[in-house]
Image (cartoon, rainbow, N blue to C red; front, side, top):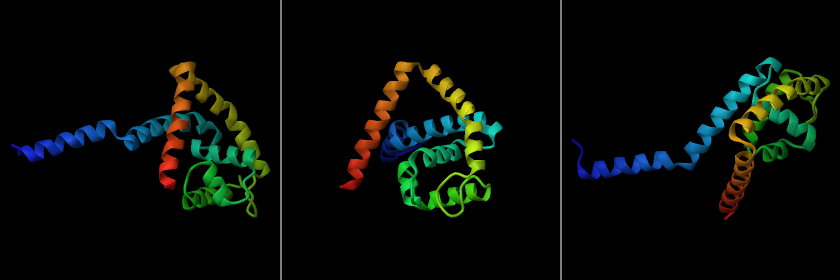
Length: 149
């Protein structure tokens, strides 16, 4: 039998688990990422890899730090991910740019991504999806402001 203090702590843990921003956002992210990974398997890419390829192609970042900032990840993780893509011949070894193979791989993956994206949006409904994007943008902005203090 738990003491009153232990029971109160357990109740606080349960409340924290149910409401935890990190846990809830990461769970949603993992589920969606796994879905996209499954859909992109035919192109030989994971969702995170396609994100990097597309960000490089449209953003033309000149440094690892710039691409890491675009994708809201740390520089060390981005360096490792870029090395893996370079080994596969998808990113140029001398600069942050897609190779011809990288462009063709991303182009092959794009219809698969579009299908996965449409499935997510259709499943949620257009209005809910738009609202979710707005709420996620507001969350990123609010938390980013707090981190800079």
